[in-house]
Image (cartoon, rainbow, N blue to C red; front, side):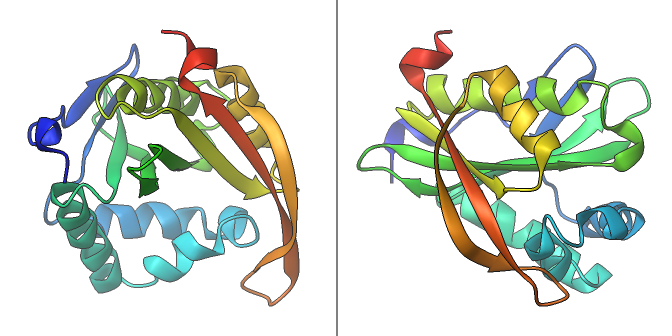
Amino acid sequence: MELRLLYPETALLTARTVVRRWREAEGKMLYDLVQANQSWYRDISPAVIRAVESPEKAEWFVRKSIARWLMQEEFSFGVWTKEEAKLIGAVRLFEINWDVPVAELDFFIDFDHGKQGLMTEAAHRVARFGFRQLNLEKIQLKTSSDNYASQRLARKLGFRREGDLRSDFRTLTGELQDSMVLGLTKVDFGE
């Protein structure tokens, strides 16, 4: 446990979004968001769909995320629009290795809010949180080799391709998919 991290920021603001730690009873909103986007995420993010396949499982995911935040094992945020206060996505730093320190970045956004730069803003703000507040040296992103939108977003933030993992995960239909690993160092982020 990092004592300096007992009181990290729980709400991060961007020009158009509020990126904040999950709160109890927000599982239903997360479930509804994932259900509305299931066909889009089915092959590129099956773990998300499995984790929140019912309102109860979604609430459990939210509460587990809160507990993991308090234990400094994961920093998981919901992403809301500033104007409408509508949940449009999620972003998290997880798989944290405090010895380096390094963490993995993961995110998803509502299809109707994609391609507007909203997740780029949110992910950039979470990367800044990771480097400045958590004092990470590196953030990694692992994405499906076919997920070009995620790769573009990562490159906008300064991530570089570090390698490929063959047959790394299964889609919900059972097909094996390759993953691409990208990395961003604190030096390259430069803020």
